[in-house]
Image 1 (cartoon, rainbow, N blue to C red):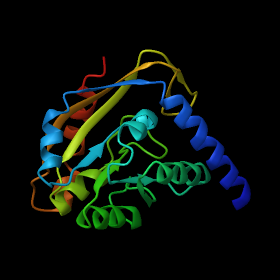
Image 2 (cartoon, one colour; image 1 turned 90 degrees about the vertical axis):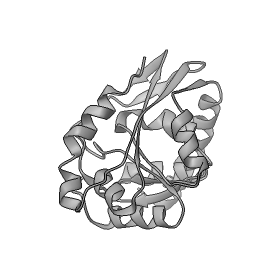
Image 3 (cartoon, helix red, strand yellow; image 1 turned 135 degrees about the vertical axis):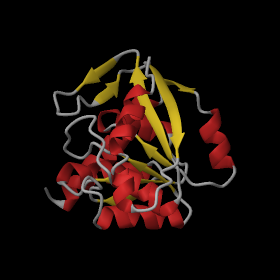
Length: 207
């Protein structure tokens, strides 16, 4: 896909997304604790499932968040739309617990941004928590914040993650779960926390 075509898709996609999202009635749930942590100046890393990315991009726009987005073609379009919504983007995948994306995320956090990671992205399996987010938390000291999204009316794509697109005028619930500090001695020990973190994220209520 040419750069010119990508630019036109990004412009149109951003406009359509804004017009759709402005009709949503977004309700944050259990956000007091994470709000207090952020207000104190402590950086956090939001952990969310890939299929719930869209409403959460809207909920946290223009909030100084660095989001990890894959490097494939669709990821380029999503990255540019995210940047137009006020995000800093880190390209790549933290699914193997290392590499350029993980380093980029840690640098962004140390520079004063919050982070956001889809630990089951970019290709799944759905709701399987890869260790990258846990390692970034252990290395930077930024706690993980479990966050989920649901909508009263939505389309679901026939993709591996059943990607959620709230319909016009939907009630969108953004729910915050535990704030988890990965306080262990090494990245290897942090990676071993992934099953526990997966259970916490799955247990965050969305209805």
